[in-house]
Image 1 (cartoon, rainbow, N blue to C red):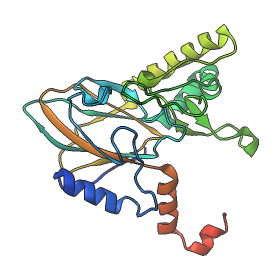
Image 2: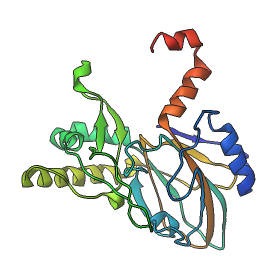
Image 3: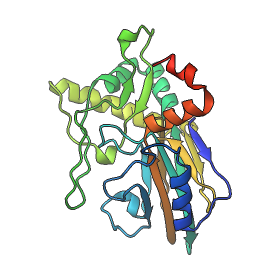
Image 4: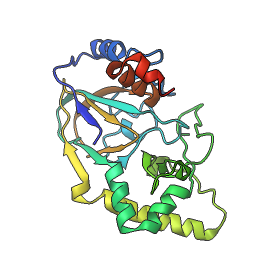
Amino acid sequence: MGILFCRRLSTNRKRYAKTHRKDNLHSKHPLRFDFCSGAFWHFTADLSLKDAAYTSLALAAHTDNTYFTDPAGLQTFHVLSHTNGAGGASLLIDGFRAAEILRSESPDAFNDLCNIKINAHSSGNEGISIMPNQPFPVLVTTDASQGAAAPEVIQIRWNNDDRATLPVDSPEDITRWYAAARKWVEILRRPDSEYWVQLEPGRPLIFDNWRVLHGRSAFTGDREMCGGYTNMDDFLSRWKTLNFPKDEIMNYV
């Protein structure tokens, strides 16, 4: 599914940040720099940034960074503490599985989410207006010219809260896209699509942001979290160099 839990990590924010930076793939540029929070972020429900994550509200399933041309590949969440309250369970959904269900149950909707491109943006904070360099579809697939019998979904780009305009050529495209999006959301909301887990201090979660949608239930009390992003290219580079000899890697260059 693309998720990993770590065990027995420090709940001291500064110590955890140091560990995260040190162990984050040892790449040239290991941590993705976020325009609001820097390379390593820390937040509570204080609305210090104009973002729904900085509240105690429930968040629907989504992927992060749809407003970036190249969304982060891996994402880390670590609950440092949660006192005087309850709730805040994390929702995880295998987006690739959901896409295959959509392809099976509604091929037309699948094709529309693969082909109709939409804009995304992040413009809520002062001095910030981020958009990708071009519109992208919700379901990014391999090039059909590569000879595959059917396009393979390689990235999910879905965040209804950051969605912008539909730069389409005809009103029919708008109607088709919304019908496809409605079917997509219905699949995401099925109980057998959802995996709920309560994050705990000292047990960070790492997941594939290109595949796994995440959300949370509402919560009460004081909840402190931290985390960070890793570029997909950096992750794949480190995975290759840890698992294969250099000569073998170079055969595919």
